[in-house]
Image (cartoon, rainbow, N blue to C red; front, side, top):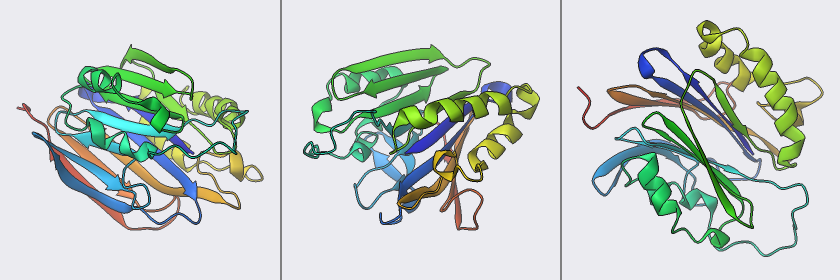
Length: 247
């Protein structure tokens, strides 16, 4: 239950934005901190329920995001997998690049996890690992001149993918000079009467609980975290992480 977007900025910089949607009864996440993983440092918010995270960046610029995959005919009576999807990202933060992280992903026991989509960003590449409960699939593409969106919903991904993508295409059709403003507006968008389908979503049992932005440049990654829906007042945390080898 989340929405991730990525837009290219000037000078080969990227802006990654993430709305996290969660159950209204789930414990609030802790704001981002800097933590050590082997030879690397990383910044990410922490989910006390799962012991993991949904979004992180390390000091090589490797950025990782995980979204749930909600199939239209999933068996809700199936036993809960033994590991949380929030554990996936911390297991990869020692890696230097998306290709190194993908090599680690090849050794994952995917059946320990409920279905998920892992997005890996860095070195001019965006890779997408999708685990649907049957077979993991990997797609990769170069970061080009086109904004990207990934989204999910506990109602069923098929119910939100189409309407949110139409909105995304409409809001970004104005060209690169409006993409920053478009991304800002997209993550705050809510349809009156269709709040359950909205990017900034709300329904009886769940809602958008946080909004994060990572500005990934040549010399640093800046992680900005807003501890509630993006249109609501809340505490903000911003951490700058110098990148290895930056000059």
